[in-house]
Every structure is written in structure tokens, then in C-alpha cells.
Figure 1 (tube, rainbow, N blue to C red):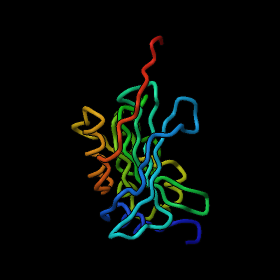
Figure 2: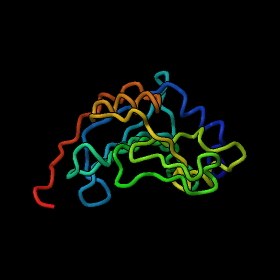
Figure 3: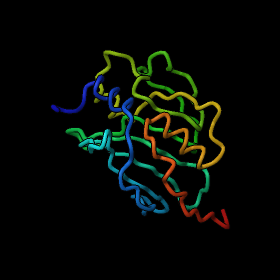
Length: 175
């Protein structure tokens, strides 16, 4: 791969039936209070090199600020190519021209970033480096963490995502 994957490769990786391998337990993330799970991906019993699954959340904010997504290795490091965001801090507003027909559409706090949302002809690495600027609302939005895992598993074509354990959230007592 020169700098990164082409559009068709990303679409194929997104659509193929896959499983997470080695979910393990929630671990401290890069930022204070963050939790993460990282897992390899397999399809048809074969590990898919350079593609992985992630889940992120905040330990002190139960049932919000959760993301589940897929990354691919590129010349610029791992880049997310599909992501489900559940109850984000702020609504996702598709501001950039690269969002095409979705520009100026509010995707809400619970939304999905899919690789088919950016129009053909856009350089995939430009889209990936901009952290997936286009999103669409998830309607109806999942009401619980287990519903989120079920929905995200179907969207990301990860058929065992519901095996991820719920984080051991520790809500803040004082805000």
C-alpha cells in the first residue's frame, strides 16, 4: 500500500463479515479517565493484517461518550475508517465540503461514520486524515450499552461485538 488503502478496499473491509479476536477487558486509555478495548479482526478464520477494532469510553460517564470503530494501518499510522459514536458530547455537524450532499446536515450526538458516505473521487487518505468528517444519525438510537453493541456490530459487520463486557463505570459523585 503506498500511503493507504483505496476506496474499494475500505468499502470491502467495511462490508465483509468479521469477528473481533481477543477483546480482553477494558484498559486505561491515552487520556485520564478514558477506557479502551482493542482487538484484532478475523474473517473466515484468517486474521486480517492491518485492520483492528476499537471501543472507547469514559469511566466516569456511564452510557455516553462511547465509540466503536475500525482502523486500518496506513503510511501515516492507524486511521479510523468506520465508527459509531453513542451519545457524544456535542452533535456532529457535517461542516466540510468533503461531506458532499451531507454538508450542513446535523447527525446528532448518536451517529455513524461509514466509508460509503464520502463521494467517489475523494482521495481516501484525505477523508481518513480529517477523522471521518461525514456522519449520519442513528435513528432509533440505542438505549443501552448492550443495544449499542448489537447495533454497532451490525453496522460494522462485526458479528461478535456483543461479547464485549460492559465497562465498570464509576460515575462522578460531584460535578
